[in-house]
Length: 266
Image 1: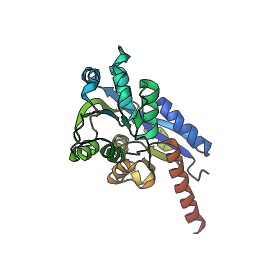
Image 2: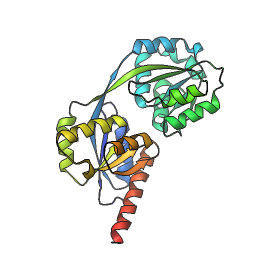
Image 3: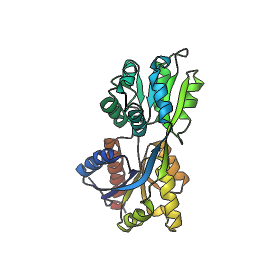
């Protein structure tokens, strides 16, 4: 059950409405009230280059999709000719999380999705190393401009080739500066950070307003975001081990239970 911090603020991107609704419904079923803070916006780039790569599927042994935005980029690339994807249906699509897998299946009709139980890039890289032989064709890896080198380095160290192509940039939402102070006035709240980028932009706004980050109940999606929160001075209240609604709900309710036990023992 929800503890003293029944209000949850989801810090996400402008293009993620359906994903926000899924998280909100799951948390609301556990007794929390959810609001969304539009923290990021996404700008797609190099789509023609991605399209060119997708047209020559026979040169690759598979596709790597680590976020819903990479799925969106592929959708944009094949918008005028979805037949491009036919040959990609025959090779594995490696996905981080069930949300990304669901989008790949439903929007791209890529049914040979694997690795979705991986909660982060490190776990997915381990899965790829188990599956792909060293002498295989490269894997196509569309990603963010600020993507960490976890997959490229880990998989590359195992002598598996990757064709990396930047397909989107992550920018601060134009409304964040105005909306964040409004959210902070409605305390107590739990703020959920979905990526290091959300941490970066919210931290910058908090510093401009001389707001103490220690006053925020910060919840991270995954270990990389947790590290970003710690580096920025936040106290991490809970961490979801996977980018999935149920995992987030379980992490928050567990943290609430521990906090309530501590209060009752005082």
